[in-house]
Length: 67
Image 1: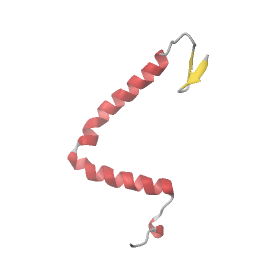
Image 2: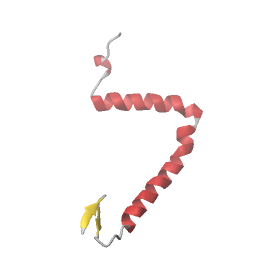
Image 3: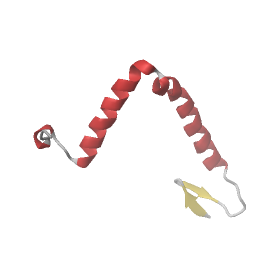
């Protein structure tokens, strides 16, 4: 027995739990494809992505300076 992706698996190759998680992830991605490919949302997604990157790096508005 070993743990993979939070599920206990046996050595005999029974990976039903892992397959189920992969299928759930693929289904969730398929649900998001229309949102990600909509041209109206591209600018909003780009802004949100930059905002998240700044947040993860710890950059605040006061840290910004003009080039």
